[in-house]
Length: 441
Image (tube, rainbow, N blue to C red; front, side, top):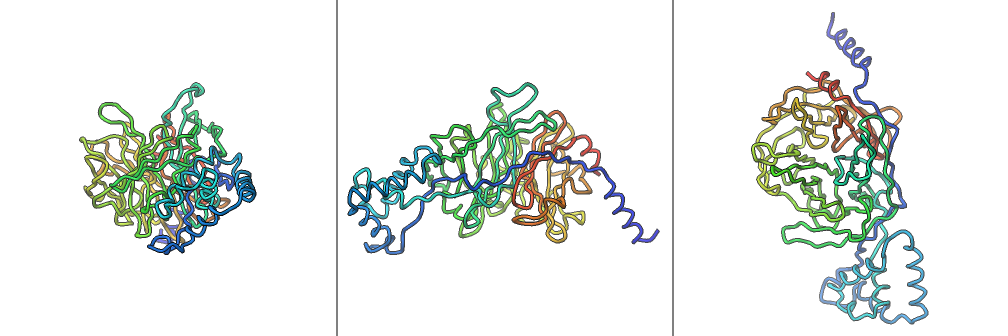
């Protein structure tokens, strides 16, 4: 048989193989009605200098001089626009007004109603997921109360894209029975505006004091290092040696000077600590933390060369060093680039690592491999064909020909694989883990 005949036979065999992943009905799509109140920067260069003729100063002077009748009308209009869409909007407006007082100190001298009106000028309603809702990650939810017998509550992080191609991170709660029954728990139309406390190390604590469940908490850019977005959070439920549990997420912060890896720690998902990492992988994308320490080291699968998978380690989740390269492209569907699709999942057989590959026509597909439990730098076997590829009916969108995941979860031998389709919406699939392992070589 000629090489051409061999290739044709291989193509026929691959095409005839039964798919390993079975797509579920549930999809999550962007909702432009979900908005968050965030600061709106009105300042001009004059406001930031020594002069007093900048736009902020001009607005302040007009607010100070407005008569009572027009003040009533302006406040009534503002309240009508925000009523029912935000919880305690006046508190957010006042908070943003006082933040602007760093540039225009006269804000502090305004009476309460005029301070509230000024806050309306330095606040915007931002539709953080109006354009896309994709690249999901999923893990066990911190709360498992009132869950149907045999099911678990999961929390999923999603990347939302809004005005200006700015990415934020939003959350949903799911109920999963370990099979085909996957339901979205009731989620709020309201997104709560946070209190922000910046730290000297470049991190911050973000607190949603009025949040009633995780879907109301939205992590939008609040630091200079995140000015152009927070992308592709990979959630992980990390179990420490003393059996305490930490809910972490690694994500890419995109700023005006480039991108960097940062880590989030969620405290019941109404308070978050964010911090930048340091070391050799600090400027990379797509880092995924292991769910426990190995040999007393925190481990992360990283992609600092932009093309292949590496193993990094840390003593404190802040400073990271590269241990070694663990995997390069092997198959045609990943020749351009490989990366991880979430934190490794521990099985009896080893660490199940979901991967992505970039092939021809910039097709993104999802693959998988198995790492050694004791030495995760050792790849035991790999899936020679994509686990999930763009389907014909869902290949077009914000970015065509893409399926991508930021992490799945295993229950009773079944993998729940959330995925972003065409950088537009989120779907879910299930995979029998033993069938997946058997298909590896």
